Length: 176
Image (cartoon, rainbow, N blue to C red):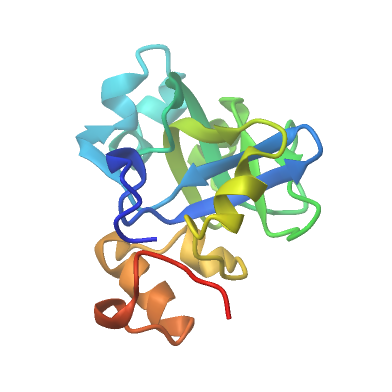
């Protein structure tokens, strides 16, 4: 919600990857870093990757938890190995393996990839409480949104898809 009070999530679009009794994990997909690229943050890239355009892959802020850890969000392809797949959506995978970058350099990788540092995490019941307090707007995930190149307009487009006018959105809820 606008006005959440936490600058780390102001106008953020978070792809919820996992949510169960033990908590929730998601990745912010619309916050690029200040121009960082894969080549600048990863010094141990295999030559097959570092000598390709993949070294220019932009890096995004995935969330405030473990910001030193890199994750590759990618579209699910039949040959993707070493990947956790969100079984609810079946469209987006997450890996920390360099194998996916090597596959992409060889032309065998997924159609879409987004490199993020960190993730957003919630403990048991925490996200449910925040939703109950109207802290979050929820929309069904679409793989196209996760990898949208126009990240600056993504938040506004998703709000519009919900049929909400931001100018008329109240910061407080009520009961009827």
